[in-house]
Amino acid sequence: MENEYKNNHVKVANPKPFRFSNFLLRILAMATTFVAAIVMGLAKETETVPFVLIPGTDPLFVPVSAKMRYSSSFVFFVVANAIACAYSAFSLLVTIGGSKGSRALALGITILDVIMVALLFSGNGAATTVGLLGYKGNSHVGWNKVCNTFEKFCRNVMASLIVSQIGSISFVLLVAISIFDLHRRSP
Image 1 (tube, rainbow, N blue to C red):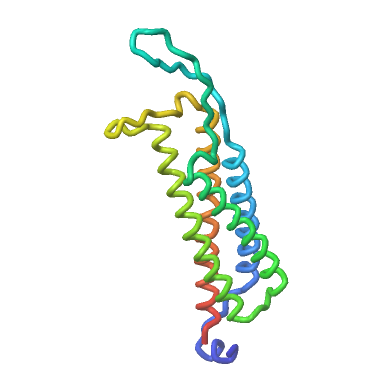
Image 2 (image 1 turned 120 degrees about the vertical axis):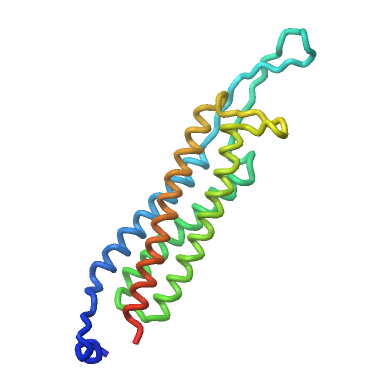
């Protein structure tokens, strides 16, 4: 195969930069998905808000909590990031241990990377939708914004979304590198 490349005057790219960038991107994906899951998982805030029972009377002050587990979208986001983090650790060990692995192993890792991209982007989309509703509300259906009351909670949600997007982009880059590497290795 190497003679075939030499005869066609095509140089084979050095695989070491691919391995090193693969390693760095997997570390980045693992770290960002871990941080995103932890920050969102620990996001909670309790505030005392006025509640008017009967118009014209004094409001009652009621403690109200905002927690990640109150939204199924936020729960899905945490689970998606936890799965991606665990997979990142697993794939990091596999790619380190099998640095000269077979094409089948490389293809399998690439397919799982694509699945992680889909999982993370769907979790990010679901959580972003709920986050935007909390930030802006929806006047058409009478949903008030809550981020003016639960500022700390909303900041944690926003931070975890940003960090998770970095992890998602890391997986997209891993897929692109893997596809290029598989193409480079094809006969």
